[in-house]
Structure formats: structure tokens, C-alpha cells
Length: 375
Image 1 (tube, one colour):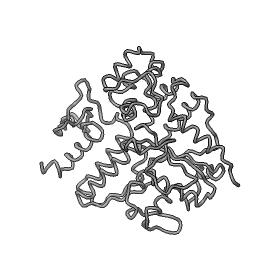
Image 2: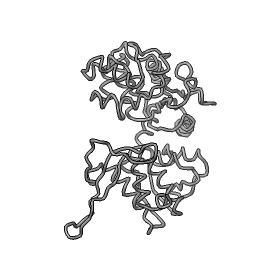
Image 3: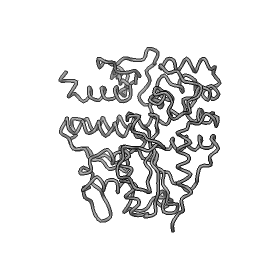
Image 4: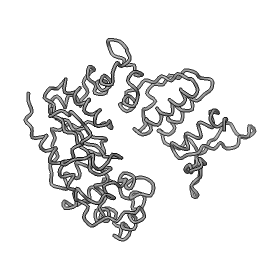
């Protein structure tokens, strides 16, 4: 047990198993015939006892055919684990990694630094990595010099790009003075599709800003932006995730945010994920071309009995609390069973199948767009 906690190879393989569901297996090396080491990847999962179990029908494949993000994550982590290195300098190790992998990499590197008494310094422009770190551990490098952040609010300023050269998004905000903070570009894509399906023309003068920060952090971001753009108004909308159903009030208002700006509306979906609004049997049937019985059978496996109409804001708690993101895309999902994407389901929704919560949100966005822009 001690070896597994301290040996670099054991730490590496264990972390890769848990993070990627992948086991690294070295092909036996014979110096007579081989000129390089060959490592194969095997897909599977870690069971309750901590043992890696290979998927029965999965054929192993060469490490070098894995994706760029996986190989980058692996190389950065392996170098940091090397017992011959005490100080690790990394230049934007988050490049080519999605948000989830950026977070996993940061947490894994911190475990190495603490567990093996190493210094790990990294340069980054990633908003996610900046947001996840304690502000006093972030060294901001600007034209006037470099210093550690003195407060969490200063971190929000760095994230917003204030005090630096304005980005195209900042320029758009200055022009239109309206901001919509969303969690991801996919959310904007879904919302534009669903607005079109419900007969709503998406406004062109509302500027999207993508950030996964909490509602309180978004409020701080808005306040920092408002210092530069005093006439700025905006809306924040995010998934409810694991927060209680009671944390969302009428008109999708997030009741957990206190002392909000009058020019900034903090909203939250009544359902766990935005994908929950795509859980419509008829739309999935149309998008996939499958039989209704097949779609109903899929949801029955997940202990869900979808009614014919799922548009009501007060729809059954089981539907509001379902893990819509996973049902749509991960593991035993709508995507894997019916070969249909979230976007295709959204495009297949009829106007009478658009949820009331979405219409409430569209009304708020249109009101934001209609507010008189001040010079």
C-alpha cells in the first residue's frame, strides 16, 4: 500500500484510470527485436474496491493514437511526477484541454506538489484555472510589474480583462451595453435554436459572455465591468445543478444571490441542467427516426416515465431533477442509443413543446434588448 501511494508509476496509472477510465499497459520489451517502448491503452472503469476492470469487448490500442488532449495531460502529469525534478515550470499546460480536464489537471498537480514537496509554477490565460486558485497564490503580470492578487475581487478584474487591452467582447459590450452570462457556447447555441423554434427572434444587441463561475462571482464580474461601462445592464443564467428546487423563485430568479444590482438579473434554470428541457419523447422520436416504444424503453431503464407534455414549469420533480446532461450525452445515453445529438433534439422540438421556463427566459432577454441604450 505504501508503494502505491509513493511510487510515480503507481500514482500515474491510478490517476489516469480514475480521470480517463484508461489503463496504461507496457508491452514486454526485448532489446533484440525492439527499438522503442510500446504502451497500450485499455478502456474500463474503477470499481468500488478500487480495482480497474477492463470493458469486456474493448480492444487495446497504441498510446500514440489517443487524442491530443489526453496525450498533453499525460505528458504534463508524467513530467511533474518525475523524482528527478523538484521545480516544474509549465507554460499554458491547459492549452487544448476542455474545462473539466483543466480542473482535473490543476487538482492533480496540486496533489503532486503537496505530496512530494515540489514547486509547480504555471503560466496561464485560462479563466477556469484563475478562478479555481486562491487569489493570494496568483501572480498577475502586467505592464507595471508583477504582484500577487490582494483580494478575490482583483481576481475577477483580471478575468474580465479590465486594465488590459480590451478584447473584442469588451468592445461589443461598450457598443451595446447589454451582457448575457452563460455557462458555455453550447448553451447559447441551444437557446438560439429553441428561440427560433418558439418564434422568437434572438436579439443581436445582447453580448454573450461564457463563464462557469457561481452566481456571486458573476455578480462581482458584472460590477467590475460596470465600472468601465456605467450604463451596462445584464442577465446571468446557469444550471441549478445540485442546488435545491426552492432556490429558484418565480420568473427563474436565483434567490441565493443577495444585494444584486438593479441593472443585473440573476437567473437560474428550474431544472437541474439546461438539457432537461430537451427531454421530450416526441422530439427525440422525430430526431432519431426510432419508434416511440424504443424511446420510452430507454427512459424506463433510467426510472423515468416522461409524460407527453413536459413544458410546465412545475413538471414532475423526477424530470426537474434528472441528470439531463448525462442522459443526453454520457454513457448509456440518448446519443449512444439513438445516434442523435442535443442539437438535433433541440431542432426537432415543435413550438408547443418548448418549456414555459424557456419562454420566461426569452421574455427577459427581449426586455433586456429593448432597454434604451445610453450614449
